[in-house]
Image 1 (tube, rainbow, N blue to C red):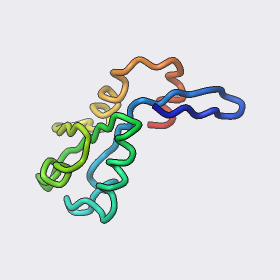
Image 2 (cartoon, rainbow, N blue to C red):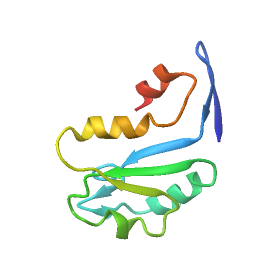
Image 3 (cartoon, rainbow, N blue to C red):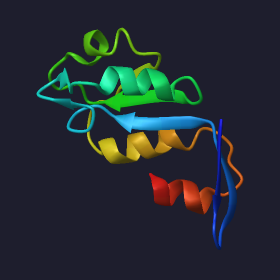
Image 4 (cartoon, helix red, strand yellow):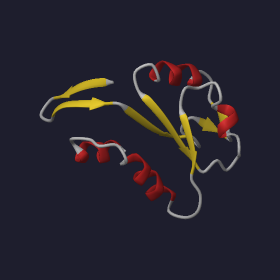
Length: 101
């Protein structure tokens, strides 16, 4: 868990990090250099969740050495699917949570 004291807002406790794969962690389905190492460092203090449409069908193999869960989303309104996944964990300050997303 990470605790961040945001001036004018208050103390925020972070337990989960939800990330997109395509175009964020990878280019053309290949994870960017150094990203695996950084993700595993983050996984020491946060639970990592990677969401992807997996258009290149490489997310699972690219992330096999990363301590994270991978979920493939499909169909239309992928952004809404990702938001719904992101809001499954109870948080005390939903407005901050959604602005971070």
